[in-house]
Length: 344
Ligand code: PHE
Image (tube, rainbow, N blue to C red; front, side, top):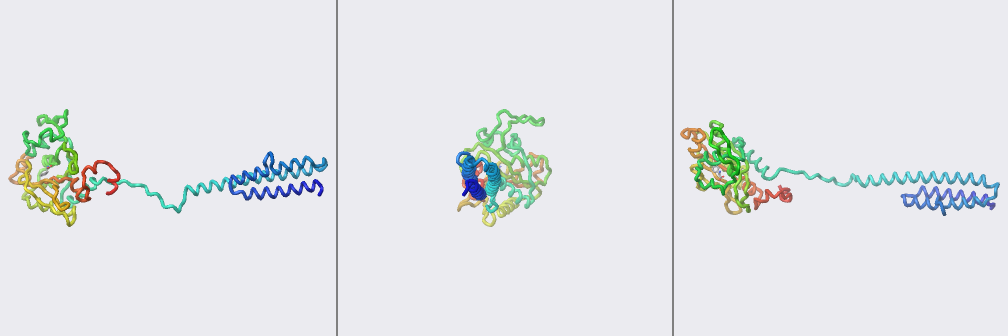
């Protein structure tokens, strides 16, 4: 075969092979291999043909050169097109990997109310159905509301500074009363006084809130806890009403197995007084105190004890919550350990 014919024939073959290889290249790696094979500057197939071109006779060179340039341009074009294709495929596949519509979604973890908050909401709900509205009082109290008006005189051991969180520097500056030390309230019975002071009878309220006592924390004690106070004052309110309301409350809150019992007890602000126990783990656990409002307390707030009677109770909210959810240690509520909190 004459040299020119031979050259053009090889040029055709290389063109075919190069276009086929570039079209077949599936990824950047294969593409680069094809580029080196055909367009490589040192030993690519076209480089070899360029050298062969130089060996051709002078009058054959123009036609051969023109054809060579055409082929080289076409292969370069094909390389550029193949690069674009591979690039597009790559971004399409990475996109798919980032969003696989067949995978189950990731659920965001929702927070929820603290078990004590939920218990408080439920207590308010039950007592609301029994006709009690909700009252509030401050956590920082004066001695009048925490003690005096509740028939707890200055010498009473309940007022011992070791039994209470007195606030060192604070005194209640009230124009109508001698300055009194302030303390974190030790019981929600303070709210009985506050409500009766501002409301003429009858009253039928509950108040739920924090109380503070310098107790060492253990499984059943904590220096801060919650109480639900109840107060019903009207004409002819009796001990039978107290027992009925607490039994109804227990039936609602615990369901059928909410057994409670009453034991005679003593509180300065109720007479007679009882302690209220609930059945738990084959035994009984104290759930709070209650009694008929002492006439001295009614008189202290300006009610006529000859005309009105009433009952009051104070229940431990944490105890109620523990009994309901079988929580054995009150400290769990205040550790903020999500493993515990998530169980509710
Ligand atoms: N305040 C009492 C206590 O904290 C409970 C109580 C409330 C008792 C109302 C009688 C009436 O122990």
